[in-house]
Length: 280
Length: 285
Image (tube, rainbow over all chains, first blue to last red; front, side):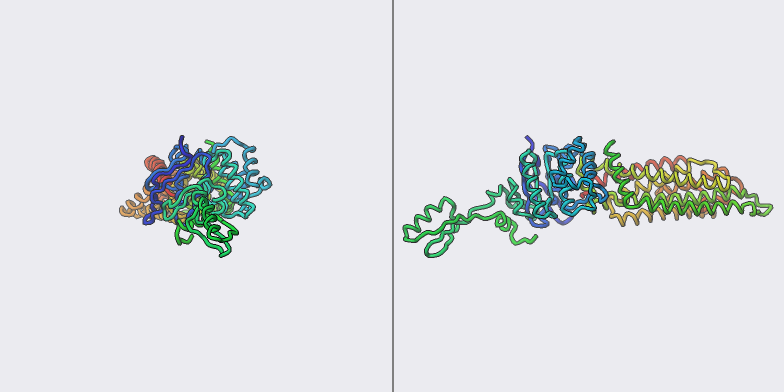
């Protein structure tokens, strides 16, 4: 069965700048994959190649088995660009109607109403884009990406302009999409958001994937913190399985144990380790 | 077909919203009002103009063809203004503003998207050019009771010239920013007109070098040649001294004309559009 999205040995060169240096990545059906990395790491280039906006220098990208950028690939794809704009004189409903026609969606008014409801814009159906806040426009952009029920959804910084309530709306929406079998590639700077919703994470640095795995896999054990009558000490490298032995040893040595805590690195720690001191 | 109409309608609404039509309609109304006034005074006083007895000039034909030539120039200019402002940012401008990307990723595809924008602009400009040209013809007929030998073909040739400018502008929009493209197209348009004027002078002076240079320019920029051919058609029945004076220009005369340039114009249009589609298909957005 074809991956929802698969890129193999993807390279992209902009004159003297090597934006991607042989990236391999896949998104399975119904999987939510997060893309992390500092500015200039190649995330947006990767996303743009996947949706056919940018041509790869070498390697290949496929959407549900079809070459990225082909008509078949575009038919299975929904995309929210990082920097996008809808004509200000269109209403929310008209924006979706325009995209329904271009996506050849037969959902009609019912689909438009459902999508606006999903992104909490049901009351703004007839409001013009120019009268919307940035957050509303971003949610409208997400609704636009969902027109035609795409199998693969690519979202480039979908929550950058949203307030906490708007982010929650999007988070719930992403979880709902995953439950319905839609695959999502989510490019975001918000580690907490990625950690909360993504099944897998890929961290890019200087055009290469430097870490990949589930948030749990990337959150490695960091040690055990033991609180005794002598004070608190950290046993580096110890795992959860070492905890009973460490407590037993302390008790045998005549110490009183008040607390034991298993320390794990957060996704943020892993990210900072992976990208080094590179500043976004 | 739905996608073509959708994209063309999208471009049309964009032009309405940006007041492109409002500006062009105001300019056109001003031009037609002034043109009517000029015709009124010229033809009212025509009977008082008496050429020397040994000069055989048909003053009504001369005035009518000269004024219609002026109207054709204005129609071409206004048509080009409309064409350029409808299309100068179709690719680069819309991509810079983030309007293009959500459309390009849809199944409709880049080729359909670009050709639909071309078709939309072409239909609008053809209707506009024919309407203004028809109005000018009607004004001359009503005020001066003069009509040219060929009424429809000159209007179609000006419309064809404007369509070629649209194709050049769309090609430019793929590779240049909106501002650079607008400047480039207007400079090309100006260069074409200057070459045409030089050609007219070259023919009057019988200068082979100027004739050759202006002929090359007309083939390189065939909108100018179509305009020249239109001018030739409106005065094709003027003979003798009247015809000679009209050919001196600036609103008369033709040194490149006929079916050769018309066929080349169609080929030129296809080449410009094919280049635009090819460049757009290769362009990163």
